[in-house]
Length: 79
Length: 376
Image 1 (cartoon, rainbow over the protein chains, first blue to last red):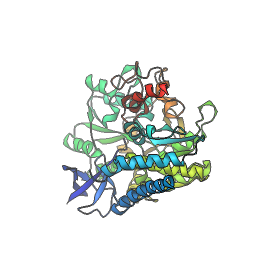
Image 2 (image 1 turned 90 degrees about the vertical axis):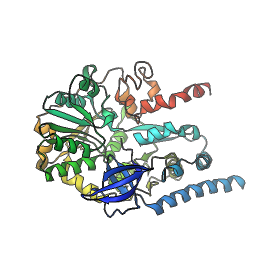
Image 3 (image 1 turned 60 degrees about the horizontal axis):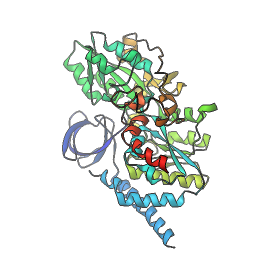
Image 4 (image 1 turned 60 degrees about the vertical axis):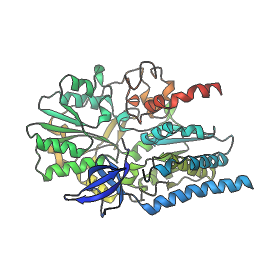
């Protein structure tokens, strides 16, 4: 029910709407719940509404943290 | 798909699994509840439990809106849909939920009720605008993720002067349900060492609302994304908190969740909705201040007021263990209906309907593990 997926904003439309691309599938959604979305942003899409903007820097940092956890484990087992 | 595939990477998953195995203290017992049905689905689908050491047990929580909606509310929606003036718009998840006397929205539709599946509240508004002679009612369910889109629809209906649109509101609240689980005593008490916190609920409410529950009951909460690596990293963070005796709210899903959440969405919700004194949950019973209704200013959009709806309590199938499963006290396979009378094709209880229900997830993915587990 709370499933939501990342969608790339490709065009801003009147009345707080936008066109997004979901891996190439185009869909018109509402931006009524988010501020300052620009073309090229990724948003989290849920039941036709963008819930939040996806933070590209934090997404990258999450992957770094994942790799750090793995590296720490490898170092510990090697020692 | 960007921002999805990299969080399903098998190499990273193996390293994370090794890190979890290394840090979980042998002989200790960790019991973590994934509150949200989206996590239940991910854990089953990606076989995450198979990657965890025996010391860690995942308990499925009540965060599946279809699962916790009591029969009485579905009965009321079906009764409303049988009114010849009414078009009932619903998310597809609800269509097959068993209601009283062997019926469901799907069966009522087959019998002639005007029930339509929609993807979005925007679709329900479009139907109301296109068919002004119909009374279009949106069957609103869901936690805080799904609530703001309902609020936006109500405001938009008011702005556009739609007089034939209303909402049957069943929106419920996450932190209150967490507290209800932790305060349940007696033989229904469930031993928990921490929560995997909801992903998209938290995009809206932020991480701050979990602070009080976490502190009061000394339970760690790690808000987690819905991809398998998100869930595994969160389990690692929970193991570390337990090992160090900490009970903090941590945020693994930093790419979408902030401490304060989406304040614009919170403002829209607060404008349209207010707390109900109490609301009935399947599994948790009547919980005070656990759900929302429309404010008096929006009464004409409130289907319960507009149609004088009655929502009496009704009983589940007495053999169905959904209630105990939603509280985390029982596992799906412990229900004697599971996989016999009750399958996703012919669900007897709500947990077998939604793909994120504990029983449906276990039927679709988890049951294939059972022989191996029995053998071991």
